[in-house]
Image 1 (cartoon, rainbow, N blue to C red):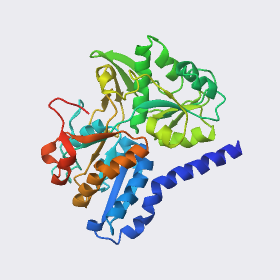
Image 2: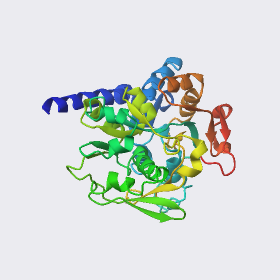
Image 3: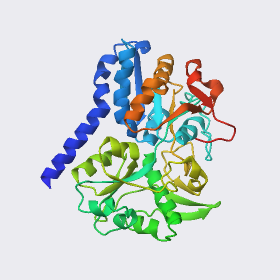
Image 4: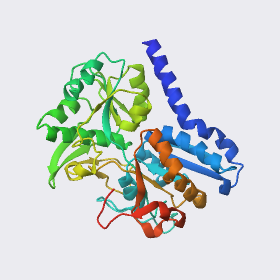
Length: 378
């Protein structure tokens, strides 16, 4: 067991190394002016492609110093909106989060107006959908249940007694609430009224419940969410944290994005397109489920996430110190070199990128984007 813990730590260090490689120059970057430095905060599932994008950009823009850090998508946005940190470029694995938490344009409440004496809350005037993904059930090649997962009977594998199942915390990470959506969609798809309960009941200190409302199944995530010891559930703040556990064999399986599973050479079960949140063809079917999060850290919005095809967004926060440089970096991301790096890392690009408020988009980005149609969602 001690050896396994060492393996987990080693894998975690390697993973974090990819995330922090470009941040090693952060201290030095402080001596540079805002015009020749860029700070990025990214969805954790983008760690590997952005670890390649940033130095590639620096090669074509000599003298520019790029630093980056990664979190679960909800935490990415909270770094700016709640913690008051300044970043030039922000990416989220869920475009709807940018609309909800920075534009106030979700089905939940709009951000509260700041008190007259308070500083204006950080916002985003626009976002561009630049990539997609789909959910898969990744499993450990070291798992004794690997043959069962490889058979494709993922429901049987997931509900087998003794299986160690990893879940990203839905209060922090889009992968977490999307995993819950997948389970509920699978319950519908396979007409198995007990599937969601079979996977979740008894595994959380406060139960996650499902209720029918407005024609869809609404999954209610409580304010307090802790995994019950000994139930086979491992809960982590971001899905990327589960990767090291899968690689070490301390987890049997976990819901991940396909790009992440492929980047880390993890075997995975391909889910039906009706439930994997990866196809616009099934957008209406995905919308039959939603996740509502009762979390006090969402001080200004009521977070209700409706099932939808996965859409990654990029934007420039209003508090960016180098918005001009940010626009140039995003142009690189959306251009041929950026698309090649995304493709090499199994991250499907959206070309041209889709923008919600095209009139507010920096002029340098307009040739690479198109406006979303009226009523269109990511």
